[in-house]
Image (cartoon, rainbow, N blue to C red; front, side, top):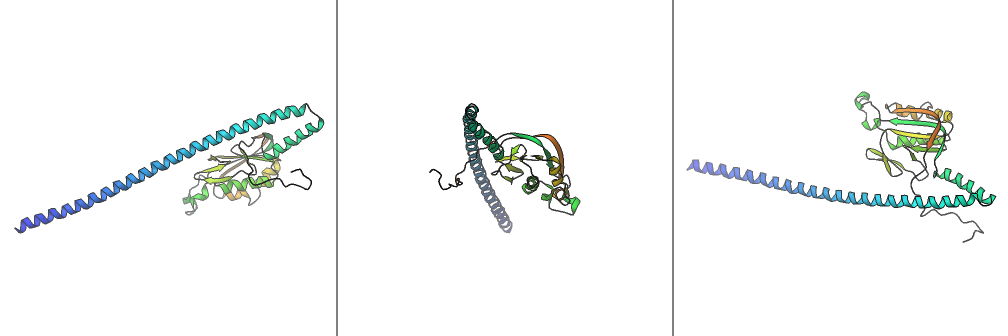
Length: 248
């Protein structure tokens, strides 16, 4: 009798354990199904956002082509008109260069940056992020070139203008809303000797990045092409200041 009771208790105990394990497994499967469902929903949302962004980019690109066609027509008309119209055309060309809306070329420097090949183990367990190029590193180089008189700058062939952003976006860097990864190539048009000297200043940007093993090369060139800005600039809030006497 005692043996039967012991066997029954053992079976009951095993059943309880099995029931508990099945319950946990069921909850786990249910939780995983929920997670997969959420991930699938998020993937659909991202795909829709990507499609909308692509359609918007295509619309803006077509808008650029339409404006260029109109502008070329005005240019042709101006060359056949009076001397005043030709002067306005020259001013337009200068304005386009300043705004980054046309390709430019000239002498300058080409700066190439790449992630360090060192590891944190080599420098006493330093944060590994120091060995990777970040947006602030690129901005240091760009600001140094601008301060040295660079007249036009591009980053991975993205023309930098007043509204350009250079910021980290995950493992990449976003420039003009386009993502780029290493190597980063910065082209700057200006006096080659002055630009190179600015980057090679003692305790300057090259030394700062070099202490972490960031690969940093500077090459002078007599002919550098900096492409135009390919985006569309919309001013929603900034408006020209009307002077006294201006027509409404």
